[in-house]
Image (cartoon, rainbow, N blue to C red; front, side):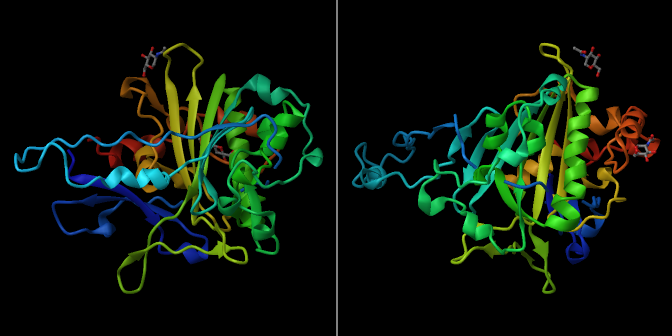
Amino acid sequence: MSKFTLAIVAGASAAVGAATTAALYGFSRPKRPEESHTITTTSTTISTPGATRTSAPPPAPMVILRDDPSVPAIPPVDPSGVFQYGFPGPVSDLRSACSLTSAFDRARRNPHWVAEHITPASLLIRNGDRRHSYFAEDINIPEKFRAKLTDYARSGYDRGHQVPAADAKWSQEAMDSTFALSNMCPQVGEGFNRDYWAHFEDFCRRLTSFYPSVRVVTGPLYLPKREADGKWRVSYEVIGHPPNVAVPTHFYKVIFAEDGKMGGNVSLGAFVLPNAVIANDKPLQDFEVPVEAVERASGLEFAGLLPPARRKRLCQEINCSVIVKEYAERQRTMMTPPPQKGGAPPSTSLTQRQ
Ligand SMILES: *[C@@H]1O[C@H](CO)[C@@H](O)[C@H](O)[C@H]1NC(C)=O
Ligand SMILES: *[C@@H]1O[C@H](CO)[C@@H](O)[C@H](O)[C@H]1NC(C)=O
């Protein structure tokens, strides 16, 4: 069962708009990516009123179990004595604002993940207007680790909201808190943030027509890509002078569509999109990946407490597609069951649970 592992990597064609490849690699034989199943796989953004943060305390000194009797009960050295000078980290700058909860990656000056919650009722309230919101540096992050407005200026990239402003119209404060740079990643603007990614965000909002409660976790990825010499490398641009903010190669969304019942079923969907121009006619399902693939690539865990018996596959329940058409048409097509070809779920065929 544990002979296989699932990895997502940047597609060979990344330069041309690019795909992601979710590949099943065998440990027991030479790696043959060609047998892998290939899955071809934006918004913009500060003031953070009402935000609260917590940092994890430094860990307690580790207790080491010794089975070597020659190791004395009181060791001759004290490695964790380094804490007298300070705890090195990592610190994830957990942020809890009214419209989002997030963790920050200080090395790359991007969020690790940003979580939101939308409901039919929350999307109906219109008290916030993005014309009154301003992009702002997140002053709760130490200055040397912060993303700066000047890093984005003339970088060629949009300040791409991870939690979209349009999901936080229920109050001006909620909307303002999505404009913190800790909710932003550098995103390709034309053809991505302002187009396909925006349609994808709209897809998430439309889910509230079918589920009473929808949670979305969004964030960046830095995926390895196979280069001409056959080796895998992670390569990404860093913007700012001096270089400060990493430009992700990809973005993920993990969607939890809840049925609204206590202990009820949750329809899970995970998607990975390249930070590149994507044609509007590209099917959204081409970007669907198993949740586990996002976990392995990000080092995060999203649904560890959700038992398999309560899990459903989102794209088996509703038609997973972005639509650039008008509203009424969208609502009509979404309820149509997905075509039979969608019956081979990438999540179960690729995921080898351990
Ligand atoms: C969850 O889904 C299963 C079928 O997959 C169904 O039998 C069960 O009734 C559902 N649970 C709830 C609370 O709706
Ligand atoms: C799913 O929605 C898309 C976009 O509206 C539509 O083109 C497609 O026909 C729909 N699929 C099904 C099976 O209804």
